[in-house]
Structures are given as structure tokens and as C-alpha cells.
Length: 289
Image (cartoon, rainbow, N blue to C red):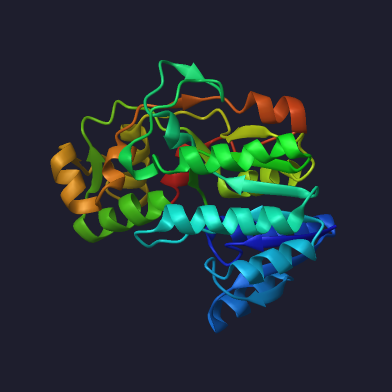
């Protein structure tokens, strides 16, 4: 299978290219720099030069592939518009072939216990824009196309990702790991390598499907912070921040980190045969680095 990937040189994208190559797929990946080109080609993919705003490039690359994985995201103020136009271009190119779009479980807001994809939606401001884009993507299933949405939880592993950026690295710099509030809120986690396998499987998912990319590991934020404090050799060194302090330090993402979420990925396991194997996040996060 020939698969076109956006965001291939990124955190999740690299693991996903590796999973596709292991399966024997031919991978092409969007790159916007020489450095990104080197990353994807080293992983075994072919580079396609362009950006998420280059809709003609995206359309042509999708048309030349058997399936598309959209993992990239524009970091500018117009990220919603860029994502929508990019998705439309790639869906136009893919036609009736698989198109997998990236969402995120944060759009559900706080959950009342463990929930699945049918839970009510109540996104923080940071991710509210995703709702309309995902609705547009999935609506094209009614025209005979094959859109699927994968909604990752909080991704960890390989000493990278949001937990590394906003918790582990600042913790090492300050000598104490930050924690928003008292940390009693839960996070739905998924290891980056397990998530990569879900993206691969989603290429064969039924049209119009949406899957929570979570591995049923829902520790509290405080447990994660405590594990990270052990990793840096200072068990219990945690800085508890109010939401205002966290927002000043982390930006708008602090509101998302304060969500209390518990999710199950049972639908993906049941329908796609997904089998997450990295199921001890606290031990992995506590490992010295």
C-alpha cells in the first residue's frame, strides 16, 4: 500500500512511518525543510516538498497514494483554517480511498468517569476549533468517501511529546515538576508506538468512524508528576500551580492539562484489532533519563 503522511518528521509521525515501513508499505511524507527531508528518508519514506498551506501539493500527493494519514498541524493563529483547507484538499485527492484525520480527546472536556467516543463534547478553548473540522471530514462518508478520525489521548514515550515539553524538561530546569492544581484530575495516556499502530490500522477502518487513541491507562496528573520527579532523581519534588500560574507559565494548554479525563479505547480494539502493549506509563515515565 502506498501511504501519504503529513507530519511525518514529527513526534507521532516518525513512529507512524516506522510502523508503516515495518508493514511493508511505501510511504511518502510531506516535508518543508532539508532537516525534515533527512528525517523521513532515514526512516524509509520518500519526501514530498511543501507545507500544509500548499493545497495543490497535498491534493496531488493524496491522489497518487492508496491512503492518507494527516498527522501534521499548523502552529499559527489560523491553524483551524489551514487544517480545514488541507483536509479538503487531501480528501479531494483521495476520493474513495482511506483518509485518516487527527483529532484529540481533549474536545470532550471533563468526563464523568470512564467514557468512550459517544461522550458529550465540551472542548477547552485550545481545541474547540477541531469540532467543525472533524464534522466536515466525517460528513464526506455520505458521498462514498472513506474518512476516519483518530483522537489521541496524551501521548508519551521516547522522552518526547507534550509531557516532556511542559513537565519533564521544565522540571529538570527548575528542580521540581510542575502540576496544575492538586493533580487529582486524570489523564488518558497512550504510548507513541501504540498510537502509531492505531493509525496504520485506521487505514482499513469503516468510513465515518472515529476512534479514541487511548490505551485505558488513566493515571492522575499528580501520579505522572511524581513519576517524572523520580526520573530526575528528586522524588516528590513537585511545584503545584494554580490555573492562572500555569497559564502564565505554559500558555492556553494549561486549561487542557487541567481536564479530568478517563477514556477507553475499546472501540478500536474491538473493530480494528488494535492491541496496545505499552501499559505501564508511570514506570516508563519514572525511568531515569
